[in-house]
Amino acid sequence: MSSKQGGKAKPLKAPKAEKKEYDEVDKANIQKKKDEEKALKELRAKAQKGALGGAGLKKSGKK
Image (cartoon, rainbow, N blue to C red; front, side, top):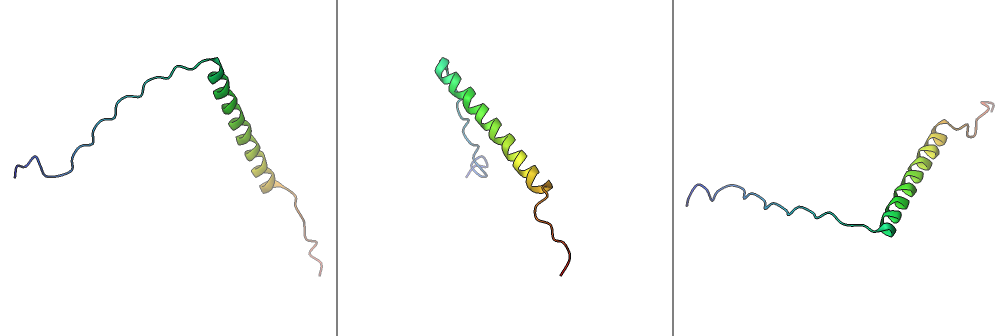
């Protein structure tokens, strides 16, 4: 056995991804999706902020 056979084999390099060509409809759909994700992220941030800093029900302390 030669010393070059032992050890881990190097992984093969993956071919580079080709750049895709988008037409106007595809570009519009991608932009719309990004806008929706941004709006959803902002809503989540507002909802979380409201839950942590909200007034909620307060106990009077009387029994």
